[in-house]
Image 1 (tube, rainbow, N blue to C red):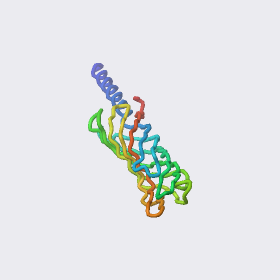
Image 2: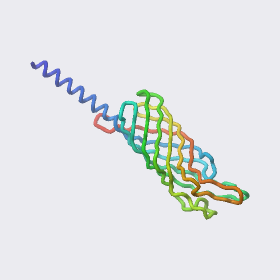
Image 3: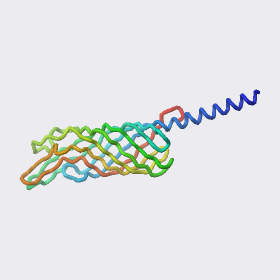
Image 4: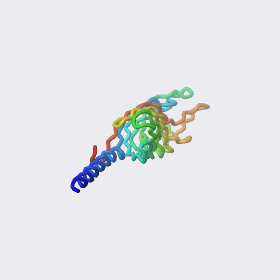
Length: 196
């Protein structure tokens, strides 16, 4: 009888320890850095930023969560029909849902952040033009990368779709307000729970 109780208690402790350890990486905070080149490079040359996300692994292969952060886009001069536009730098603050698919416990993964991107910074697109920058728009950030328990290394495309807001017309040429970047990033996973 005592042996049976001991086995049940040991099995229960083992199961609880395993469950707590698994739970610690089922829910996680992802903190990362990213950078990239603007595409097309009309009003900005490059971008660098910080990603912060919460992810819940709904299954071992499928994660859902929320994502935010800050991307700083470095403004640049652009010649447009003989005029030089002194484009201002600006920021993007995403408010997005996070979706990830992990085919294996370690290896290649795919995913996207989708939501709304708030554009911050100077009210004017260029310091020497009256055009007003957009406030934001639909945000999309698909990515593909490599993951293990602690790290994600990824390539991404990020963009706020703002239509013709921020467009500058000089004669028969125009400059669209571009927020698109192609780049790379690195994120660290912090497990939430007592097992970490």
